[in-house]
Length: 149
Image 1 (cartoon, rainbow, N blue to C red):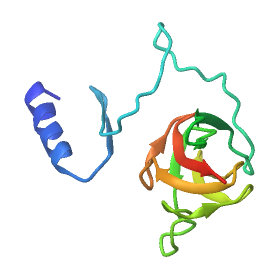
Image 2 (cartoon, rainbow, N blue to C red):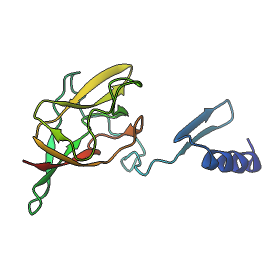
Image 3 (cartoon, one colour):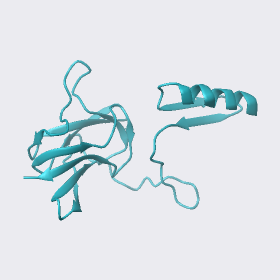
Image 4 (cartoon, rainbow, N blue to C red):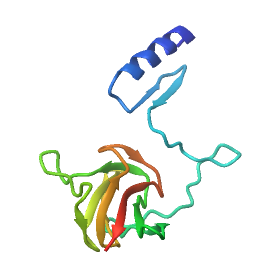
């Protein structure tokens, strides 16, 4: 694929609603992404695969964000595609302003054809949803910000 073809493809991708595009053929491998996060790699360019993958009923770790406002975040425990509703015709698990309880499912992450329930380990009010539906998320990426009760 020549530079002109790649440039034209990039313009079309930028104008589309696609978030990611991967093209592979015998001559080239292209990957375009509109995601703001990048995959981290070590200095050798190899991905870090040492992180364990939790089971399908994972409880998400919580990190302290701000002691003054008493906020915590719910983070992605694995890399995958996040779903913010249980099915396309169902409402979102949680929206800004809604209350969340400990152990309540707030999202699903699909990785390698397996769905993982993302459960809250805090109780409070959702103050922000930090990902888009069907976005690819990274390990440790913030999914929700919660103001504690």
